Amino acid sequence: MSNVPRLHPDTIAEVKDRADIYDVVSEQVVLKRQGKDYVGFCPFHDDKRNPSFTVSPSKQFYYCFSCGAGGNAIKFMMEIGKRQFSEVVLDLAKKYQVPIKTLEPAERQELQRQLSVREQLYEILALTAKFYEHALAQPQGHGALHYLLHDRAMRPEIIQQFQLGYAPGGWSTLYGYLVDQKNYPVKLVEQAGLIVPRKEGGGYYDRFRDRLMIPIMDTQGRVIGFGGRALGDDNPKYLNSPETELFDKGKTLYGLDRAKAAIAKQDCAVVVEGYFDVIALHAAGITNSVASLGTALSQYQVKMLLRYTEHKKIVFNFDADGAGVKAAERAIGEVATLAYQDAVKLHILNIPNGKDPDDFLKVHSAADYQKLLDVAPRWLEWQIQNVIGGRDLSKVGHLQAVTEAIAKLLGSI
Image 1 (cartoon, one colour):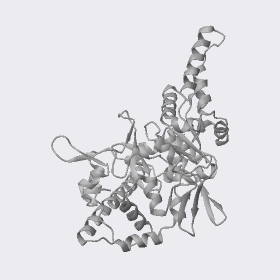
Image 2: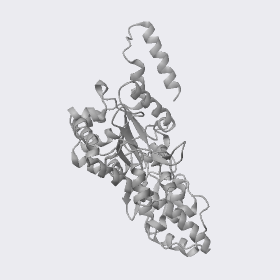
Image 3: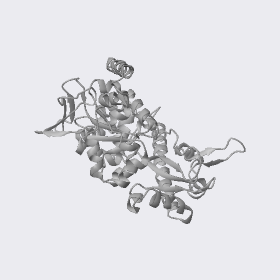
Image 4: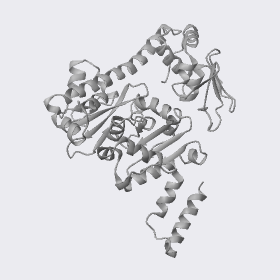
């Protein structure tokens, strides 16, 4: 947030007094009790063997004995998110219901305006998710509902749990609801990524039309964007919300709000390709699964997952077709530095016969899938297997090509 007004010292002091260090840190780091304190792996350096990060509720202080990082709840949030002091204090003030005072009345007005914009964006997106849910249950949403129930074999309670919906086919149905009926400013609805200005003639049209709608949540479970799947031959097949003040797809993982507790409990995260893979896995009881949002998995996203795991195990389960293999290779490339340092214990699972998790679970049990997860090879072994492929190593030419490729692979480590 730019140009954040200066906060009154009373507000800062009260936030420091109310913000609980364990409460704040445990949202980002898996902590285990050790006497009167808590310990975990430091999020500020590659702390992968012996937990060196301590949180003291009695002193309201964190400290890493390896890298020296330390401070209070405000300092932790500044460092973990690379954020400004005032931004963090404002977030904590809201979390702990601290009244906000600024040094000048004019600054207070600007602060309230900035906070109001974000709050209204969250409000608009939550209302839109409800609008899409309602539309799914109407006659106009019959095709989308049939697709979910029959083509995807999805149970009604799962549809409800993931708040799936339908964007009507009209050019301005959502616009009419949010702007004309609910009286939200058109520029604010545009900021939320829900409508698009017409290139000619003025006015706006709905970004999502005649699509199955999947709300995307932040780690706190707030709607920050949408993924829309075409029901006909429209392209693209999947359309995501644009980047907004609330939504950055390179820093978001679909399903993490639901998966983070299971990831911490099972000490393992499963990363798949698509929304429906996550939904199918959660429906089957494999709730430590998330998906990237149509982009190569970034180092930032992997580090998000590592906050919830003690032993840093992550399994990439991308499709076993050519595109899926390339996606896995791209993802390995993105996190190569972490993998080489063993800061992440990276495994790769390709389901036999080129199936994705959703297809696999339609004919197999969750236990069958879990067995595949348990034996998924480490990333280097997987890459070597790919190099060998179906080559006949009894042939000199094949053997030489494989040997050179493996030597090149090992040389990059």
